[in-house]
Amino acid sequence: MKEAVSALICAATVHFLSQRSGGLKVSRSHRVLRKDRYKTPIHSSKLGHFLNALSAPEIPWLNQVLGVQTPASNAPVTTITAGDRLIQRIKEYSITREDVIRGEGGELIELRASKGDHGEPRGKLQNYEDTDQTRAWRRQMQEINRFLMKAELSLEGAVGTDICDRRLRRVFNNGDFEQGGRLYGGFWQPMSKAERFRHLRIDGKPVIELDYGQVATRILYGRSGLEPPEGDLYEIEGKAYPRDGMKKVLNALLYAAKPLTTWPRDTVDLFRNPVSRKHPPFKEVKDALIEKHSQISSSFETGEGMRIMFLESQILIDVLETLRSEDITALPIHDAILVAKGHEPLAQKVMEDSFLKVTGVTAKVSLEDQA
Image (cartoon, one colour):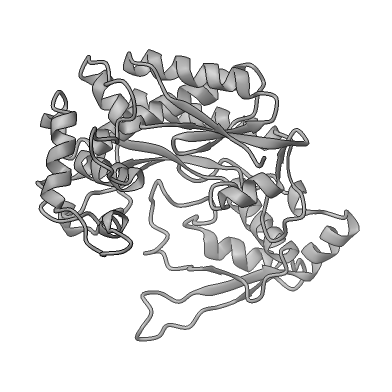
């Protein structure tokens, strides 16, 4: 009860302080509110009771406008806004969005179904039974999120971004806890690279981005007990193929679950001659990559990419945990991290050590900043 009421008050407070129009939309339907690990504390089965109590005339913490059932709606949607008493308290205590404690409610370990599982569309959240492993992952995410909530993060000259939105969750794919596992969430992830460099500060300092290079291919070599070839893994000797295009085609081969016969999406134009507008046959490019990586090509077009991504996510978690033990804030962006300027030497070493520990091969780590 306490968690649900607190979540309602906090959500209404943030909505009021954000000066957004309309209100928070929720359903009071018991069918919608049935037990589900992915429901937030607001989605309590007693939501209607809490809303009625909090919006009573004698204690107007909230306002609610009941939804109306229509033929097009699955369930009526109720609109919630801050009530007079809540607004009075917000102003009286000069509460800001940063003062609203973000709880740990909501599932931090998500499992998403693959296309075709039980007729569900790709990406639909899938319920699961907890194991020692999922509990350990959840505790790990809770610790990471607690650390990030205390971090000194700021945005210089940027508006409309909620810097309290720091909650990360781990997302697994295809109904399999050995596929995917990347971290999603955090206000910095939707920002463009240019915006991060221009506005984001950690401990009052500009940020440096450290990025794993050729990560999926290097992981596959390591998982196979092999050392990757020297040089650029996307380059074909004697051919002037565009690097960006080769990277996209090679990654497509790693993630495809069946043989590719045509250009992957958004790749063919990268290979076009700017004058003649001609491009090499896809089979030629594909065969060149298979020949270059013949030692691991048996894993191409078998759907191994999501299992490789799982190892990538394990590496990133290890990096975050190691840097946290050094009291260094690192913000993850899939296979990269952001750290405050000055911490890049240690962060690079940690990234290299974590990669070697998980894969058995060395990493390629690049650094980039605003300069």
